Length: 326
Image (cartoon, rainbow, N blue to C red):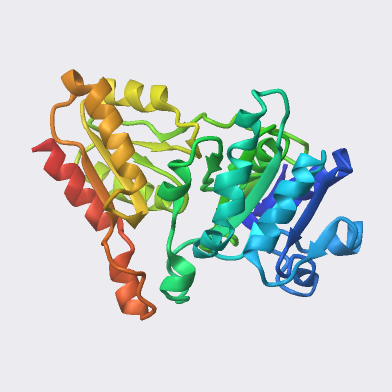
């Protein structure tokens, strides 16, 4: 075990993958330049170690980066490309949605198209709406792509290794405010299965589902509620597609209540899918309404105070839990 930050855990996963399979390469805007920057950045030092043949700084064109990933994957390589900010994935959407997500299906499952798209995301660093809009619900709507959204360094490493060696295209979302969070991480090659959620806090009164940085907000709310005798069970989804419905339903069957937390917009957000699933498959067990805690339906503000208002915090979670328990 080693104490690693979230970014260093990702770096360890990339390094191990490149050691194990020479078909793995990295590409993106500034992925090589980062050797001169913060060591917590995921590609720090990799250009120095593997050279420009396998660590490629690209032009500022997300469409070209995605095209490189699709083409090289079709030729038998394992590309790991980076989209610098989540909203920029819209510029890569044609290659990802119309090609990467559909090629394996169109081959009748006879071929594989392994590619991983690392996407930086998050709210809270004052970058404004063009850099901070989380689009996981858009990605989840596209059949043929997997979607991973880790919340801690240990999971990030295990999930990234699984993503790189998965035979399907995977969108891997990295919340930038987590890059400096540290914990003990296994140093060896270990892989967490995609599509398996984790109960990060056991409880009896209400289930709260979250992912990414929102998991930490959920745990803060759980601590505050515990003071008043409310036992909150917190589930970290880790993978949004495929979704671990069994873990959610098992928890809801126990607690009888459900709230969902995410930092993207509430309207048509990913929480709506979880709420619908619970209503369809656990309606008879529910003791109260399924509630969603999410960002308001506005672009992400750049002002620090407005951005703080935009991002749902523990207080909003506590109010929702109390409401569903009434």
